[in-house]
Structure formats: structure tokens, C-alpha cells
Amino acid sequence: TPHPIDSAMPYWPKAPASSIGKGKGSYGQTKAVSERLVFQAHTKMGLPVNIIRPSVISGDSKTGLSNPQDFTWLVIKAIKEFGCVPQSAVEKELQWIPVGFVAECITQIVTTSTHDHLHRPPVWHLINQGPTLGTMASLLSAKVVPEEEWRECIQSSSPSFSSCAPYLAELGHHSSTQISSTVKLSNQLTRETLMMDENPIKTWPTVTDDVPYLKKCLS
Image (cartoon, rainbow, N blue to C red; front, side):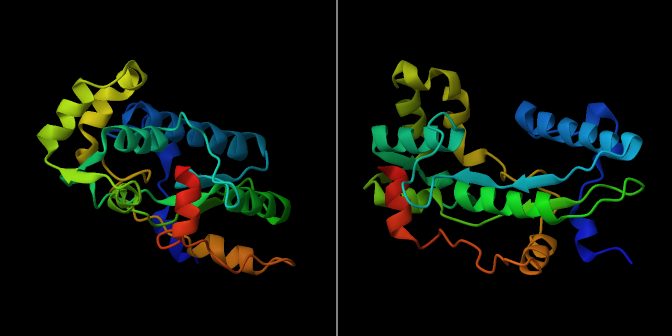
């Protein structure tokens, strides 16, 4: 009997290459094509693989350190520099999941999971919620402004934002960070598996209301 989470696993290998990740931008497409290649290595050559899908990997739980070139952090940098956030983006969920927790989960998954090359490789979701851009803007004492004012800020911004200016300008219109907005990704299988290990991971990080952690990420 298929696990209920099977309905949350896009079956990329059956989709034509031209449609994989369609509408999700080149970054999303490369993720989808990579999954397809991994799937083929698993089914055709019997290689033991795991497909792990974290949401947005955020800073270290202790130090807040993260990749400063990640788009999410460029957004935070822009909000901090301009002192504002567009009204259309304040409810956007960043879906942060701390890098240390992701590393811990990956280590446990790859050292304990079993494989059957006759079937699809296991897909593990590490999806988290929060904080919103509005929450981060509040911690930065940034004001909420109309979208047009935000775009004016982007147009007059420093060269450091030139490469991502078009994306920043449309910040309030970006879709979810999930693989597909039509697919509901669930942590159910992942959490059940991590709980069964000899050293179970029982607690999922809650970053939405963890102000000390969020401030570390902003420092």
C-alpha cells in the first residue's frame, strides 16, 4: 500500500524534460532535472540514493551565520538598506529551516534508510514555516510601503543589488519556495522515519517566534 505521502512526490521521471519545473524559473528547473538524473541512476544502475528536499536553509542556530549570497539574504539586506518592505510581500513565508538541523537530518537519513532499486528512491521533505518578511522587517524597524515606492528604491539602489534587481522589484509576486505550488509537500514520512532511529530526532525547529534566533540571523 503506498504511503500517503506518495501523493506529495512529483514523479519527475515520467515528465518530458521540457515540462520539468515549468514555471518555476531556471533554478527550480535545475533541481527537478537533478532529481530525474538521480532517479535514473537509482532505477537503471541500482545506486542507493536519497532525494532530500529542504525548504529554505537558514543560518546556524548558535551563530546565525549563513550564505550571504542566497537570494533570501539579499532580500533581507535590501529591506535593511532601504528601511522598507513592500506591502505585497509582508505575508510571504520564508520557510526557514536551520542549516544544522538539515545536516543532522541528512546524516541520519543516509545512514539508516534502505533502498530498493526496482522502485522509486525515497523522497524526504524538510519543510518548515515562517518567519514572514513582515516579521523580519519589523525586527529591522523597516516600514511597510506601497509597491511602487519599493520599486523606486530598487531602481536607485547600489550596484550590489544589480544582478537581482528584477527579482527584488517583483518581490511581492514571487511564488512559494516549494517545488510546485500545485503540490502539497509533507514532512510526515520524514518525521516518522527520524523518530524511529536509535537516536530519534523528536523536535522540529520552530523559527517563526524564535526572536533571539532571528536576530542572530540579522546580525
